[in-house]
Amino acid sequence: MRQRDNPARPALAIPGSVAPTLAALHRHSEADWRRIFATQPELTVAWIDLAARSGFKAAQLVLGQMHLDGHGVARNPAAAYAWFEKAAAIGSVEARNMVGRCHELGWGVPVDQAEALRHYRKAAASGLAWGQYNTGCLLLYGTGVRRDHREAVRQFQAAVSQGHAKAMGLLGRCHEEGWGVPVDRGLAASWYARGAEGDDCWSALNLGLMLAEDGAPSAATVWAEQAVATATPNCLAVISKTLMSQFDPELQRIGLEALDIIQPKHSKASRSEAVSTDVIHHPPNHPTKRSRRINIVVSYISGLMLFVIASVAYRWDCLRR
Image 1: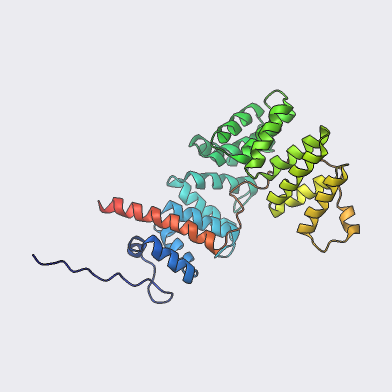
Image 2 (image 1 turned 120 degrees about the horizontal axis):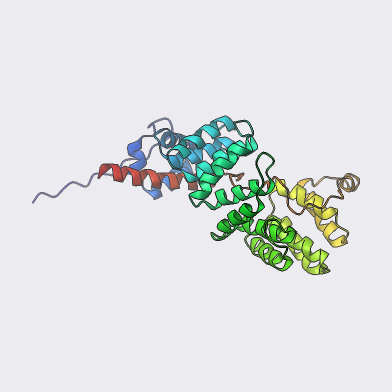
């Protein structure tokens, strides 16, 4: 019997020589992709763009996020919305959630909270924890929709069942304030602790403030420090302002240290002017939701691209059967 030839593995594409093709998307192994992205990160956008324009929803979601954040491409919220909408139309639940985010915050489209809620509900009904969380947030805090605290609690509970840390924090807030459920500070503290263990900075902050109110300053300091350590820059500004408004000198100190992280050259005089008398347990606009605002670097984009490639390869195999 004649032995079959073992053809040599095709050379990897290099910039300027071989245009990205669907065949190449299928042909390269994960090791190939890791090598391409490690040595030629400039190829990443071209491959994602090819996969997105070829109708792969995972790639469309990634490309939309890149346009939203301005990583690898020029920041273009309108383009981000268009890609999220395309991916949502062919079944991406994550993209459906992001379409809602765009309507809620005016990314590429006018602000329309009622329309945002419509998309969030669809994502929530499909079982997406972020969709459930976002639905709950609008029902709890929304200004363009009818508020419904009881349903908000149900949505947070659904997200919590999937381990969603931020939903744990807001469920704690509902128990602390009596929004949709009876006031129960013990349950509130328990949910705050669980959310903080999941690195939700607002849960840590709220637990610290509750402990300070209950006369446990040492424990309050621990959670306030964790809130600062796990906060994003947007959250850090609010956390700093909140802590500096407290009467406890240790909490004020942590607030000033947080401000130094944001503005290291701030003078003591200008910092004192930043102190507010308002105590904010949780900002109404929940600035850390996912869509959300991830600091994408090349390694992150590459990781997402590997996910896209896996989706493309799977679909390619299905088409060939």
